[in-house]
Image 1 (cartoon, rainbow, N blue to C red):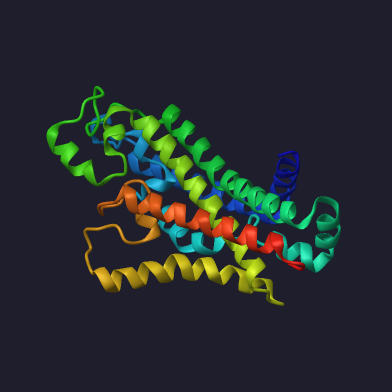
Image 2 (image 1 turned 90 degrees about the vertical axis):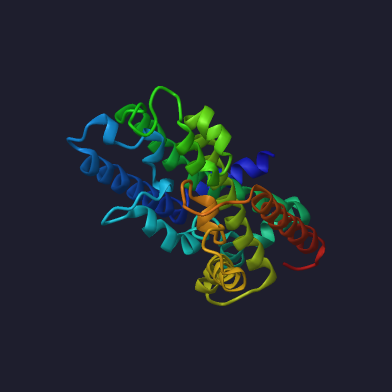
Length: 276
């Protein structure tokens, strides 16, 4: 555990992690500026509740940071820590680390550290944003007033993940789904690192391609097969909060379990091999 914490701290200090954090904070600031501009001078009853003003809410503006995130996320998720094994190989750290703690522990601890570092980088700006929105914008609006939803509104939000929690505790709902976004980001980042163990390349840019293809390619393929605009089919439909398509909780958690099993298999396989 100590080794995982130390490696996580090291990854968070890397330029790639700092750059990703800066990008996320920049998008959050753009979203906040858009909110100020959109709701300036409006009556409270005409505003959205403060829980729906975040970057993950996909509220459409002329210059929309949420849509920007959708575009860059499949590449950005690899940046904080997904190149850890490739970087260690190129600079010779891998040999000394394997000699110090053993191959099995090296692979497992670095995958865990990659997960934690990526999750923190993507979650922290969004939690800060949530806190600022709760302070700066009203919660009792025309859409959500007096902690009570009308029947029509409840019917509209049934497509949300865990909509019953949204009805009873909107802030807790946003908080937990933000953590879920961070956890999924951490898994994707660790998968990028795991894939770099399975397939080597002289060009580090190639390690950004697998997650880009997995996220965007799988979504496009599923849309061709299913061809139903009312059902959530892409990664963005599940990771962003208030999209207009119905989501399936079993599909979400089954996908997470399969991805975690993939990481466990990579860790076991590469931990037993003589060379990484």
